[in-house]
Image (cartoon, rainbow, N blue to C red; front, side):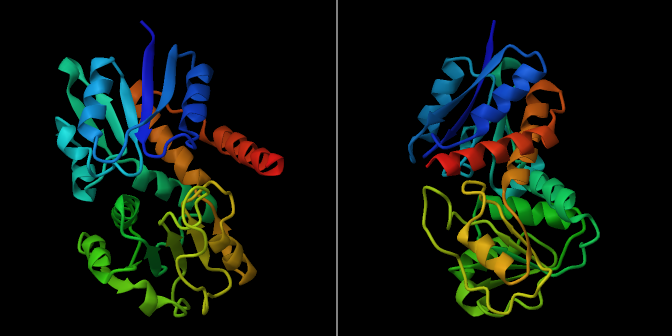
Length: 280
């Protein structure tokens, strides 16, 4: 019987996960499909029951359900539980649902692939305090990075993330704006600049030093206004394609036991997004 997998979120039509996973299924000779399913906010329990009823073999979880999905699961990986967010669900024996979070480890793999692994002592500024920020912060600390400053519109939410870490501090976006000189790595995790979300940048980049590693986890568009401005100031920039592919590869491996081709997928998705931009 043909297996099928899914990504659930709202919105979800823009996701490149179906393209990525179906390519990997094809490359590895797996007879399976991957479907985007819109599950409105507040209806996550109903959505999960539907996936189970229809025999879905596993699914990814994206905005806004990464935290609200937790109560629907039978087991949660310890790291995902600590993060308070799940982005991958596997269906085990007797239909037991297990939640994982591959965002953080996917980010670290992409970071080191792009910038090397010799920047672990750089001070890090993490912008945003959502599920992705929590996952990234914990994975960075577990891999020896830090110290980390967490910046958010509200300090209370920033403190919720920094409180998970041994060496971190919270700050408001207003207070950190224009004071970026001490940071060697700056990571943007909010939806500001995403193709379907808020335009602009989350904070001003005055004081940014040339050579700073600036990463925006958004991948559509490939270059956000935030990255463009950072590049003008001499930063070395990276978009979210690497994180997206590596977190997806970790999910794929949990479902199939196979490590897919990440380098080839990064090239294909970049080309796809470039062509889409040209054709608009």
